[in-house]
Length: 138
Ligand code: HEC
Image (cartoon, rainbow, N blue to C red; front, side):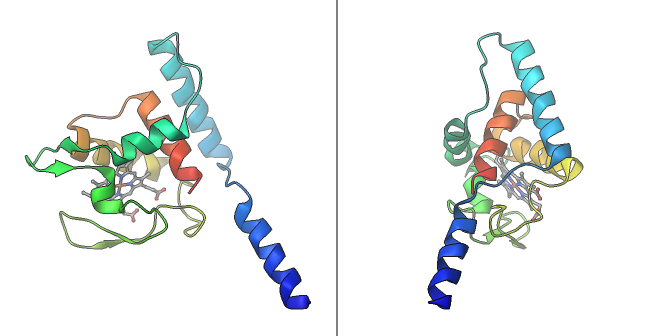
């Protein structure tokens, strides 16, 4: 019985949605304002749109097809691998790697680099907000 209760408790924990910490919420609000300023029809970030973007393939700056999943894999709970350096990357999913999406500076730095790797340009406020909304659910 104790074991069963523990299992129920753990699965409730696992079902709880992850939330952004306070600095990340402020960052998301800034992205949201910026998105609204460039597009008056913008009405909020969309995790589904973020997922589609995360999985979409582009001709990267090296002339080879690349997507966010190339390094982070399709399942964000798994380890990934940096295809440029062959170094392994810990999971992006905050549910298994609690340090993720907790440090605005780190997030901004990697989004800038990674969007450049994949799209040959920086992400727009909407694109960044959408992928972060997707990653936080993982
Ligand atoms: C060429 C490989 C590569 C590609 C492609 C790539 N990433 Fe990354 N990403 C990395 C590496 C390396 C790090 C930093 C190492 C780490 O945090 O484990 C990182 C870190 C991140 C982080 C920081 C998370 C945190 O809070 O620590 C985010 C967010 C992220 N990537 C999102 C993306 C998105 C969105 C895309 C697609 C636009 C993408 N990545 C494509 C290699 C890549």
